[in-house]
Each structure stands twice: as structure tokens, then as C-alpha cells.
Length: 219
Image (cartoon, rainbow, N blue to C red; front, side):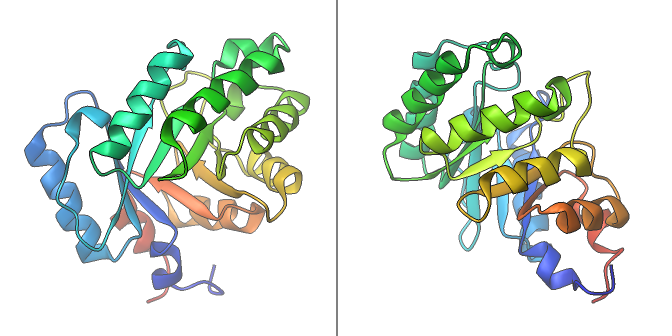
């Protein structure tokens, strides 16, 4: 952990607030804290857009958290988020389709969102890795790349199966190489956990407890 500085870790963080009870004041506080901590981005629910966050990347979610929304609904949600100022969209796949081996459905789902957004924003694909087998993780990552995603992301943080694991991050990173980013998200609450994800190949971290995590890294 001594090999990576607090500033380097901050530059990888999506400071996240996706709680259903979040208010506009909570989002304002998130943005203020993000600036104070020097993180890269904030990630909020699409209904909270637009937000004033100069100097920060703004991310929103689509099809969150279940992924069971119709593809056209996800696409419309992503397009509207971009029109309201989102620089990045984190979409949730239909996890059931992946578990059933229907990768054509997963591909179509992601393509629909990608086409709705165009190239105006980065697309991160949440695969809910804790609910998938290793083979399913690999195949979904391949499909996400084929569909034009910019990142693959472990988890919503809301699934009962769990959040990010170093094993899943490593598998995802090995599958996409340096062609796509890998975002570890879900249950990362300590510097040790964050360092483990980075060591496994994560290039972005989704954190709701960014301050606590960053304090564990050398300044």
C-alpha cells in the first residue's frame, strides 16, 4: 500500500451517492467533499441531474440497481443523463440473461445504451460479478467490449450476492486487458480493500466512504 499515494488513489475515485433517500442537499455535500478530497468524479442517481460540479467528472447510473429495465428505457435514461450533463453513465446489465447464457440479449442491451448515448460520454457496464460464475464474468466482459463499452464494473453495491472482490477484478482485467477500464465498486470501505482492488487491476474505484479509504494511504 505504501507504493501508491493518497493523491494517486483519489484520482481513481468515483465519489458515490446512490441512496434512494438522498436529497439535493446531500448531493451538494457530496460534491463539496469530492472537491475537498481531490477525487476524479462524483456518481449520482439520474434524477439528481443536472448538478453544478465544475472540475469534476459527473457520472450517473442507468437501469439501476436491478438491470431488469427494458433496454429502450435504459437507453433513454442514459441519453437524458448525458443531455443533463453526465460525462459518464454506469449501466446495469440484465444479470438474469447473463446467468442464463443469453449473451446476445446482454450484447443487445449494452448496444442499445451505447447507441442512445453516442460518443458523448463514457459507458461503464455493471456486470454484478458476485452473482456470476467465472466463465460468465469473462463472457460478459467480452460482450461489453464488443458492444463498445469503455469500462466494465463489478457491482451496484445493492445485490445480496455481494460487491467487488479482488478475484473478480483480476478476472475482468485479464479479460479486457488495457482496452477497457475496470471499475471496482461495492463494499470497498477500507484502504486495504482499495489497495487490493488496485493490485488486482482496478483502474477506477466506486466509493461512498472515500474519506475513510483515502486516510489509509500515505499523503
